[in-house]
Image (cartoon, rainbow, N blue to C red; front, top):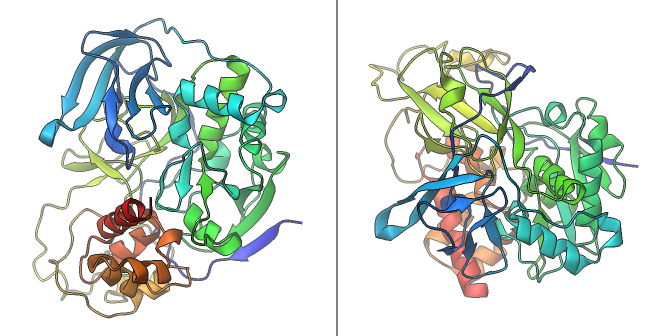
Length: 450
């Protein structure tokens, strides 16, 4: 019998522009990008040059620290540019897609008939291994490890997040095949976590060889880190792998079709989108085609991902590897005269500073304005109301800033990732960049403990 776990601490942020459950096959993008900056902790080594011809599934680069982990092209076409940043850091590899797609052939087989090494090799060669991440550190999993469990969050509680039950409709066979492959990679359980507040898709409820757990409560109840904390906490030396449902489906397709099929469904949402809907695209697509005649204004912030954890991109930018949402909200480059001194019926308030906190069902139109400047830590206790883990968040942040390894361990650094502190960052009175601090702490621990 599945567990029902209640998350009491947290906060739902109701924003305007939630995607309507209508599926659109998006206009085919002319160019696609694979971005090494999407993958934390890797050192990319290029395998291609400008002008090279590639197929879908052709390796573009590999990780210096794990050479067996390959990052492959989502489409067939020509490498048109390799964009670099400071110190020649590789930012994007741009591929101009062919009209008729060609695919590299990989092993087509029933995962139940293969051993662990064969499954790992097939996933790595196809370029799908980066979809599997590990806790602690929230980095790409090491195939040499054996995780004590694998976690899949089958719902997303972030603002404007896509409905994953809607996305996976009709994918039972591919999802089950993906689960069959993942089951060979652990001696423990595969935990499939669904939302207890509404009936889940039969793609999830009818899958075999998983333990289904039910969660209810506000955001961040959909974060896999919170779910791990409540079901199977991580102790020092232990490893858990995590993966998104759409990536499980991609792994299933790999073994059924014998090719890297990078198609996925995303939501286009936000208060500045005329027609927020779901779109079927290929991963890494340019978002410009989705925005044509579909914006209410021009002064916008374009985000690959959600407003709390997503990455800022431009209007002609590319979807991030792990993202299933494009969010468009107003840019906050303006000044509110006496903004804090007015009643603020239309302004969102977590601390009950404005009367709008009384309107619990109201959808808000928020921009990117910080509403103030950075300052020293203000001890409000708000972090404890928003992070449903049994840790001391302020003390952990300070331990990271002090680079105190022993104290970071004692305060629970192994259990967290940046996204778990995103809500705290949103409500932070001090305007502290908490996610960046958490990332620095995780990188430091990984360096010291490896």
